[in-house]
Image (cartoon, rainbow, N blue to C red; front, side, top):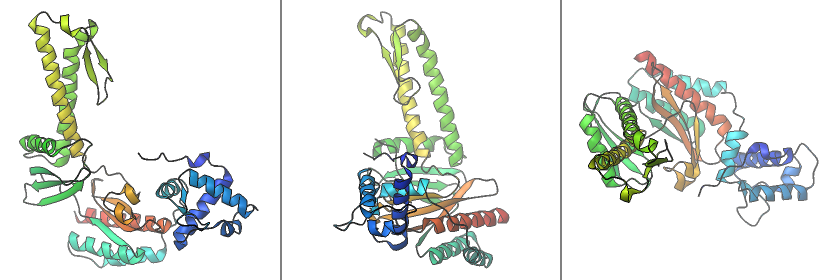
Length: 354
């Protein structure tokens, strides 16, 4: 069970400052930060014992941890997330960092692949971390689609495009999905995929879900109005139509057939909802995103963080992403503007070329 993130605004000023300085000290040195070190830098004059009490309270909240017997503390993954979301001060991009990115991309007049190789090298050199570059998404019509289960939390989608290109993408499948349900989803999509892009398929599925919902509502309306049935969790994904007095309810076959039809429509609606979930393999958002430790399933075992930003084409559609992978004690304040600027430059170059 995921621990709920405390609200930074619920802390008093002293707790907030102690927490911020522990995290900043750890990010700078990688070492635990002790109470005596903190007493020399806090804005108010307090004893080391008082600081230790505050640190213990922060540890109980799950924000700090003691890596060994020493009195020093380091931030937990939860603490880092809270710091990044509420206290991180992002630096302005330095002229030196900007010039290096500009030089790398400005010297590259070849194809997009070479451009992305160059930006990957530049990010690695600037941040001393591993770079991550996701190439532009294909917008050609889909010829064939296949889902392959790799584990409970990982699956592979194989996309074969009409122009002959093939893409493999790793994603986290919706909860409760099985290899069988993935095959069913792929079969359904392949039956309607011809001539459509991935985004067009998603729009078509959304339209069919809406139609199924309207059809169910229409069939069920009379049963609900007569008191024969009622909705449970209406409008939610776990909604049910509950029939009252089922044993002596349906003397003629018409209403029985109607209920059977509603059940069939519910089954179909559920399948289409699952397929819609599959098509949302990666919900990209605009701007830089930071994944810390186990928030990023690809890198959780190595205790790494990922700072990533999408880039867009001339139509302002997200077509790929660039980022940096490093230890959780990354210099987030410096790396965020570097990644953001690199993504903007890549997007502009691709848009200008198109």
